[in-house]
Length: 139
Image 1 (cartoon, rainbow, N blue to C red):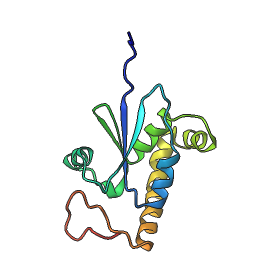
Image 2: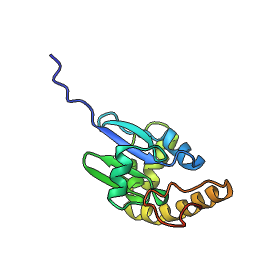
Image 3: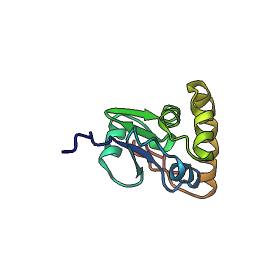
């Protein structure tokens, strides 16, 4: 008889059309003891996107990490990912050392978001606009 508790599914929701976000989310790993990471494209209609929208979180301005019933948004998401992240591989070790500090995460995230938004503007991408704001369709 197997008494092992199933590993928690942890959701990472982001805009897959963003090349920088996509590259980050494809290489970030979490420790197996924490759970299983499932990546969700924010451009797909999903229950988690509805939950994010109900909480008033603008998915165009930050990724969301869901662990249990808790949603982590933007800088908090990247900080939490660093804390639960695997330390294997150069990228994951760097991610941990850079974003393990809540203060550093809160300073760096807006800078990264600025360049992400600039990149998406240059690429001509449209916003997801999950909050349905008028005139909020372009970066």
